Each structure stands twice: as C-alpha cells, then as structure tokens.
Image (cartoon, rainbow, N blue to C red; front, side, top):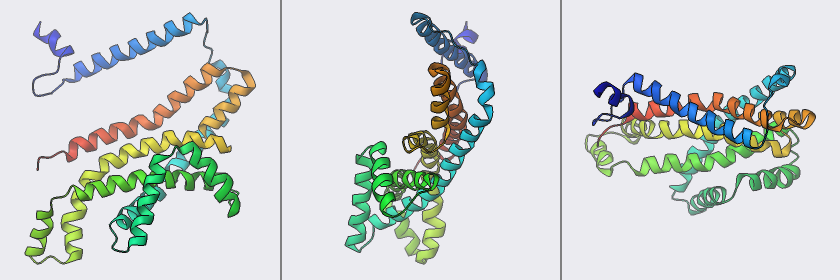
Length: 262
C-alpha cells in the first residue's frame, strides 16, 4: 500500500521518485489526449496529418526562421534590458525618465499594437524594408523591457550590507562588481532570463501579422491551401513545444541549482 501511495503522493520533504514522475506524467498526457479526442468527436472532426509530408521543406524553413528570430532577439533584447536597467538608476534625470517611460509603455501595451506601430510608422519613416530585421528589432524592444525589470529587480533585491562589507575590506568599484554583484546577479537572473527566452519564442508568432515567414505564418499559408485548420495548428503547437519545453526544463534546473537561503 505504501509503494502505491508513493506513486501518487509527494513525500513530506517534497521528494518525488522517478517512477512517480513517469506514472503521473503519463496519466496527465492520457487525460489531455482524451479531452481533445472527446472534443473532436463532439464536433465530428477526423484528423488527418498525412498532407504535412509534402510541406516538410516549408515547415522546416519556417522552424529555422523562428529559431533564428528568437536567438537574435534574445541577444539584442538582453543588451537593451541591461542598458535600460542601468539607465533607470542613472543620476542624469533625462536618461532615467526615458528608460522608465520606455519600460512602462512597452509593458503596458500589447505586442500586436507595437508591431503595427513600429513597423508601419517608425519602420516606414526610417526605411526599414527587411521584415526579418524589423521583426528582430520589434521583438527585442518588447522583450528588453521585461528583461530590464528582471535585472533591476535582481539588483535591488541584493542586501546593502554586502556592498558595505565589500567597501570595508577595500574592494574597488570594479572588484565589488566582479566578485560581489555579478555572481549574485547571475544566480538570481539566469532562471528568469531562461524563462523569458521561452516567451520570446512564443511571442515571435505574432510577427506573422507583418508577413514574416516564420513558423506560424508558414502554417497559416499551408492551412489556407488545404483547409486543414485543426491539423495545422495542432502540429504548430507541437513544434512550439519542441522549442519551449527544453527551455522551460532548463529554467527549472537553474532555479533548483541556484536556490539558496540568505
């Protein structure tokens, strides 16, 4: 009886054995499959994915574009986030308020509005015609605001006593940054930044609104040809899961690795 209980209940210390993890993940997967199967049966839809084989090259190209979009946006948005976080702590008021307004505006408005605003107004005014480059810039500006708050929040969560102790032992500003601030900032921001990468991958799907031929736009074009809407979007979800699940698992691993008590 105890062995059966261990398969379905976590121990008091929170430990879960591998067999319990596999068993419950399998049960959850079965429940989700049954839910979708019953729903499809209720609306009398029969799925047929056989047509996808003839579009495998287009799907693969769209998959690679999404991956490149996400990686480029991750790098650029990180630099924007670092600059914005530093700017919000600047003593020069115009820089501080510029960065603060940027973060509040981006976080307070939907991405789809920003895509149209920056592409059709700002992009047109400055002659940005490459849709891939425009998509990277728009996504980077959007995600940079969230990364800025992750970095700023991590820095503000540091105890002031540690900086005072560093000064007390004679550390210079550079040494304090290298040996005290950066190691703790890395531990506190890496899990959140990894999770933000998953958001970048998902948010890149909205760039299909300006005809960037990434994964979502590719599947939209395929579904328009053969009218297999359900199959296309279910397969699209699976492809995005292939990208985001490893990132999510990495984020959870980093959270466990850097978890500590003050």
